Amino acid sequence: MYKNIINQTIVAKSIAIVCTVSLLTACFHEKNEDANVTSSNHYAVVTTNIAGVDGNTGSGDVSIISLEDYSIDNTNFGTGTDTTVSTNNEHYYHLGRTPEGNVTKFHINNPENYLSQHKAQETNDVSSNPHKLIVKDENTAFLIRYEKSEIWIVNPSAANNETYKTGSIDLSNYAGDDGTPEATDAILIDNKLYVLMQNLDRNNGWIPGIGYLAIFDTDNDNEEIDTNSDDSTPHGIALSVTNPNEMDYLETNNTLYIAGVGPYSVDYTGGIEAIDTTDYSSNIIIDRTDTSIQSFGQTKHVAILNSTRGYFVGYVAWQDTGVYSFNPTTGEIDDNPLLVNKDISDIEIGPLGDLWVANRSDFGITIFSTVDNTVTQELISTGTVKPSDIEFISVEQSN
Image (tube, rainbow, N blue to C red):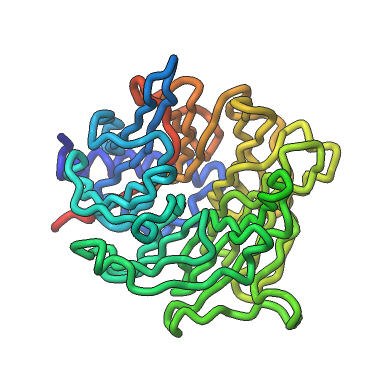
């Protein structure tokens, strides 16, 4: 299906061109500045779905895109309509959210046949709505479950459900009156697990409460790190933005950037918040209470290239979003959008330093240069289904 070896000569020439342009514009990809891209094959793993029409059942799949030639395979295992994906090394994990409530493991070279499938909740329990799987090592991973007040510690190499769950992390201090903190995203940094929680009030129209970022030391029996001196509050970082949706990490300045949607109303309490992982201090980068920027919409997704260039998705209304570039240090937003009036479900910085955009309006993926924000790959079609989430896999070559 895919070539196993990248043509190193072609890639080397391409990289030389990119580096030359980057030097001329003083723009570079800080996340991967030490990566040797000629030593790996890169793939994008994209979940796709489409709702049913006229009573027909909706459907979904996973599309695999080779970064060697941007060829795409849109017909693989087949999935439900509410899905997401997590990746680690040569494997990707398909998360069936609601109603499936399961985690299915694949190898990138065999996307039509799964290696294992495990339930994400106890037997006969309702779907836990898994949102993220963070793999620490071959036998340890953390399963973030949106509908539950605990994270599952699991063995991603387990042969059956009986040996899959190995422990749990309690989030009940953040759960509120409705019993769940709505954990939505997570990342592992220096073996510390950062967990993002929305804290919505389900009993009162899903109004956002105080969002939190909790931190657990996975090298010390998953003990929670106390980030404040107030014994009357949870140990986590109380966020200034509300309804946090996702986060991205920039290693070169030890900073997490969190996109807060805020309520889907005229209450402008969203934005982008930066958390310094060295001292847990916080800084609002984009403040949606500023009336001058409210026309960009609510900040739903964020992708950070380096300390001077990042991107966010501005949500104006259902299926009406835009993609904007901004300066993660100053918060200045470029008035020239990359896309507008589209249904954008995800944005990600790719392994080669470009911006990938999941465009549901046009059933495909568009790739932009992060040097000048121009289109470098026109729409890569996902066929009859719409793209949802994008993750990447880099497979090391044998020398």
